Structure formats: C-alpha cells, structure tokens
Length: 82
Image 1 (cartoon, rainbow, N blue to C red):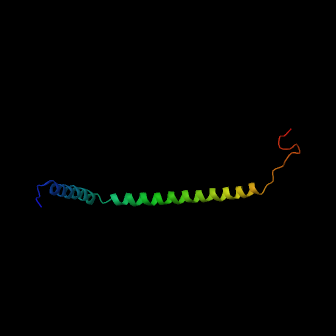
Image 2 (cartoon, rainbow, N blue to C red):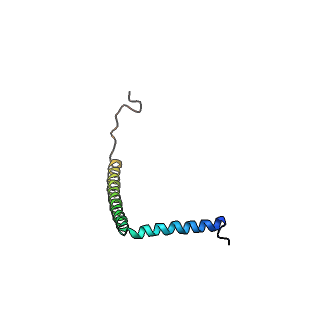
Image 3 (cartoon, helix red, strand yellow):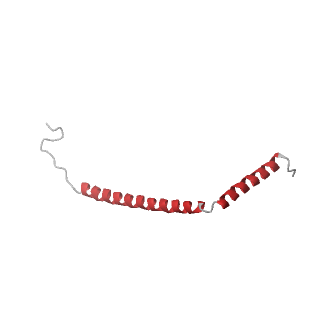
C-alpha cells in the first residue's frame, strides 16, 4: 500500500490525532476522577427517581382501588334527570 495514497494518509492522520489525544489525557490524571464522581451522582439521582416513581405508582394503585370500591349514589328521577 502506498503511504501517500488517500487511505494511507487517513491512517497516518488518525494515528497522529489519536496519539495527541491520548497524550493530552495522560497529562491530566484528574480527569477520570470527575467522570467517576459524575457517574456516582447520576446513579444516586436515578435511584431517587425510581424510588419516587414507586411511591407514586403505589399511591395511584391504592387510590384506584379506593375509587372502584365506592358506589355512586343515584337519583330517583331517571336517566334524563327531569
């Protein structure tokens, strides 16, 4: 494969680009710590959202059972109301 052809140039470009990105990431060692903290915070927020959802669903099911267990009073006038 000719290294000056477009596919060869693309490989060299990608290799150089990724090399500079990896070098920049290796210089900044604290960068991974913020990602871990963000992941932990996100997991806690997702857990809280699931807990709130479960509370709402439980409340709605109880209220639904209470509604279906009641009887609606009817008037003696009939369907038209007159």
